[in-house]
Each structure stands twice: as C-alpha cells, then as structure tokens.
Image (cartoon, rainbow, N blue to C red):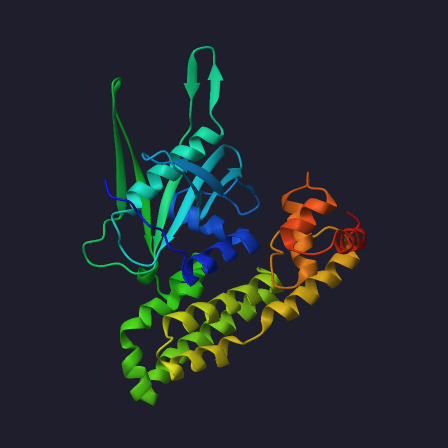
Length: 321
C-alpha cells in the first residue's frame, strides 16, 4: 500500500475550531448520524488528538486526528469524526489508523487478555458525487474470524437551510457555501443570481441572531459560526472577489477579537468559563490551555502558548484559577 500524505486545509481548521470552541454543536450532529437522542446537556470529554503511528519502514509519524471524544450520558460512548472536502478512498486507511490508536489509548489488560474498544466513527463530506455511499466499512480478517464495522457518512450539501435549523445542525452552516460552489462564476457575472445566494446568508444571519436573542445559543457561538462561515467562503471562493465580499458583508468581519473581550468580561464576573476559548488573543489562549491541561504548570502553559510565565500567572489569578 502506498504512502498517504495528509494535508491540513482551511476547512479542517474550521472543523476543529467549531469542535473545540463550540463543542455543544456536535451533539445534534451525533444525533443525526447515529440516531441517538442526546439532550445536549451531556458532558463531552475530548481525547488526546495527537498520536504517533508506527510505519512499516520503522519510522514513527505524528498524526493529528480531527477529533475523538467521549460523550458522558446514560451510556458512555466514544466517537471519532473526520472532515473531508471530497470523496477519497484513502480515508478508510486514515480511519483505521486513528480508530486503532484511539482504541489502544484506552485498552485494558486483564491477565492474558487485551480488550480494546473502537469508537463510533463518522465522516463529514463537504463535497460528494453521486457514487458516494452513506457509509464506509472496515473489515478485519483475524485468525479468530472476521470483524467489521461501519463508518457513517454525513453529506453537508444535502441539507437545506430549513433542515439545518430544524435539526439544530448549526455545525454545518460554515460549510453551506459548498452548495453554491459550482455557480460562483455565474454569481460573479450576474448580480441577480448573486443576490439570491446572499439572501440565503441574510436569512442564516437573522436566524442565528434570533436564536441568540432567545438564548438558545450564546453570543460566542453565534460569532464563531459567523466567523468560520467567512473563513470558509474566503478560501473556497478565493478566485471570486464579489462572492467573497458579499458573504463577508452579510456575516460580519472581525468577530473573534470582540468576542474575546466579551469572554474576558464574563470571566471576571462569573469566575470560570467552560471551554470554547481558543482564539487569537493571548489571554484567551492561556485560559483555554489551563482548562484543557489542569496538570500544566505556569511554565508549561507559557511554553505551549508562547509567552512569559508571569503573563500566565497574572491571567490565571484574574480568572481565579
């Protein structure tokens, strides 16, 4: 089997940002994929996302999974999600490598028996063709018999705006632009057609605003969805200036800096703020690293974030940590 090169894309970055900063958005995705009935109040615990995979040539490669996490509900289950911008059979190899390592991370040895539990795995396709299946399959042929499991597939382009909001699949909003990708050239040349697409984004923006006003989502989640929508459109429509500008004008621009200030103010008033604090501002990054790695010392956090230990100490005292 040939070597597989995995290249991170801006869409991977958007995917990971949503999962880390707005992790409550993943629950409806899991319910849609696996027919589960999580309420949304369950605790999500993210696993270590960096693994070292041994290759046949003896080398050890550092790989970063898109995400693996455990949902603590009536029943504890492990999940592994990946994001792919187009159909690619190499994903099966990637899933097997990651799922195996995830299983080994929590493997248990009892006497002469090693028990490993594989995660429930799923793939989000941002693009797909008519031949794309609704599930992938991994089959392992062992001396003790064959074992196989499915990797379920979600195709983001199949969901309408109404379905996204009815099913609370807000996670898909930043990727909605892929629905319009094949029409970009028409939009550049036809203002009427462009306005039709932008009307959809105006609807998305208004419906997010309404959810925030009803406190169904917090201001930070709303702003992050808007910002990630801009980021995806900016990269996907990089050769279509009018399309990019149209989406940005509607969804808004520099939201992360503003929202970081909101978080800091909330942190001063309420003490600890749970999750979703990764961002460009140093204070927010320190806070997130400390929450994610409670065992880290100030020096370790400083090295991770790229600042002085004194800055870390001052920030943690501000939040009462």
